[in-house]
Structure formats: structure tokens, C-alpha cells
Image (tube, rainbow, N blue to C red; front, top):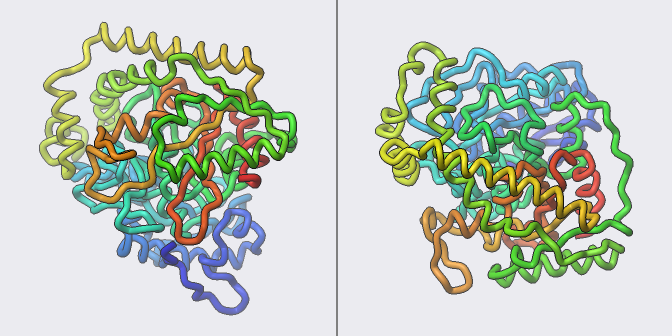
Length: 461
């Protein structure tokens, strides 16, 4: 793995490369964190130059790490479609270059109130429309494990920023795979909470129905801290013991996967069985087929959401139309999708029908969890290893060329559409091997329980 954080600190203060997790940071006195935050900015600048991980980095002379709060002086990064006061929000699209929001998104404000400091805005697939973060204007957000490979999308820069060691955590956004897939490709923990758990203001949304702000971090314990700060929750979930847990293993999610993925996931399942976890061959009936309804919902809601976001921006951007954004787009795949929305809009009737499919999927999730007494379901996050750049539309899996989007999102899309919480866990891998991950998915609204389960199970796999 590329080390972007060579130790540089002196006087007993560890450099960012030696202080990777949030808990590492919190063990330091606040004064040491304040000193170390400057090293994080320098590491972010290097990651921007080497990997296109960041679109913008906070100038070092503007760094003002807090001296109080639970997360005092802890640096973190934010995907560049979420508003941070004092930094641009471009959403990775040329038409918004220069846009500076006046206030923080609520999630950012919660973390700022706790003392955390945003040191940069991370690269993304333009307008969050894609799986590679191969941004035509700002360059591809490269995978720290292999810069020739994608970091995933659309929150690829956020996952890569954590994987490269520049920050202990980062915020991303997820519509159908945008936190989970980058986590899997970059070997970090990714948490997509139940839809609606985190406030969604101050974000350039694709869809109010499906979007969720999520978290990338090194450990589940770190995610639990961040989740508690964002939700301002006083809930404390008791530690979970693996023995006696019931985890659903949906067989169709394990079909047609890369042999390396299959081998790594089978080893993880064996470790869970050894620890006393009961694995049940059960899933959500029709989940893979029903998930296709999510595409029309995105295409219907995106023009409305973009217009609503621009109405709250500075006057120079309020008059922008989706057609103008499409004309100035730097990424051919995104341009094509925007033109399709404009030229062949989704009808009200189709939208209503597909919204009903989403509700059906939610009911089936709840029924399956209740009927089988499931604590969670588990499956390979993606059926493939992180592809090399140039595979934006088509990939080869098991000797067959196929469309990338439905192939890569196959497993995580149903839960994302249903609004279920998803926790992506990187598996133990030999040195030099590409990351492989599983996703643990809970019942809708069971986020606290899922995080407790994830912390217990991740140490086993």
C-alpha cells in the first residue's frame, strides 16, 4: 500500500502515519492533536498531488484546530458534494467551480461543535453519478493500494483519503453503492446508515428518497464514535458476543463472483462459524429484481434536487440549469446520463409505481428479518476486485464482459433502496493483496445494533 504519511513529527508527537485511527488521535492530549493536524494537511496535499484524492485542501495558514470538545483538533475530510463553510463545494462538476457555501451542512456542524476540523474536500465521480470516481475535470481518484485502479464511486476520494492515512475518517454520500463500494475497494470500513438517520441538508442530492450521508473510517469503533456525535445520541449499546448470533447468507448474492472474492469470503464465513455465529441460507425474496426500480427514482428526483440546491446558493449559481451543467460536464458518462434525464424524463406514473416497489422491498426486508430471527445479513460487497481505470462502463468478470453498474452494485443496491443500514468490513488480506470486503446489513432502523454487531464480528474476519 502506498504510504503517503511518512513520519515527520518530532518531540514525541506521532506523525499521521503512526496515528491512523480516530482512537489513536483521541488518546493524544489536545495540544499534540493540534500540532499533528498540520501534518494531516500536508499529507492531504500530497494525496491530492499523487492520487487526486482531494479537490481542495484547507490552506495551512487557515488551519485553526479547536482546543476543546470530544473531537478537539481531530482532522477529517468531506466529500465535495457536502457543504463546509470556508471551502468550495463543486460536486466534482465544472459548472460549480468557485461555489463557496455560506454555512455548514448539519452533519458538518455537529462535528465542528465537537471540535473536529475539516482539512479538505474529497474527489468524487462527477455529481456523484458513477462507480469509479474517474472525474473528467479533476482527474481520477486513485486507489492507494494500486494507483492504476479505481477507488470506487461515487465517494472514492473519501475512502481513499482514509486508506492513504491522511485522515482518521471522512464523510461520503450513498445513493445505491457510493459508500459501500469505495470502502470495499480501498480496504476501509464504510457505514451507510438507515436513510434519514443523518440530516441531509447542505448537500447536493441526487434523490431525497435514497441518499444518505455515510462514514469511512479504519475501524467500526471509530464509526460508532462519529455516529454518536452526529446523531447527538446518548444510547449505549451493550457489547455483543458472536456466539448465538444469527446471520442470513443470501445464496444469490454469492453467485458469479471473482474466485479471489469467493475464497476470501468463504474464509470469513468459516471464521464466523467457528466463533459460534449461526449462518442461515436466507435472504430477502426478489431483492435483486426489485432493486432495479431505484434507477427511475434517481432520474426523476435529481433534476428537482439540483434545482433546489442551486436556489440556496450564491446568486451567480442560482440561474444554472441542468442543461447548462450537462453542457459543461467534464465526464462523458455523466453528460450522457444528464442528457437522458432532460430528453427522456421519467413520467409521474412510472415514478409512483417504482416508489411502490421500494415500499414493497422495505416490507419484505422487515418480514424476512422477523421470520428468521436474523441479527443481520452478510454478503460480498462487490463480486469483483477493484478494476483498472478505463473500465468505466464495462468490466470483465469471470471471463465475461458485462455492464459495470448493475454488476458492481448487484449486492448492495437492494438494501440501499430499502433504506437499510449497511456496514462494509474489509477482510484480512496478505500483504500486497488487493482489498476484499463483506457488507453486514441490518434491519431498517437498527443502526446502533448493527454497529455493535459489526465491531464484534470484524475482529474475527
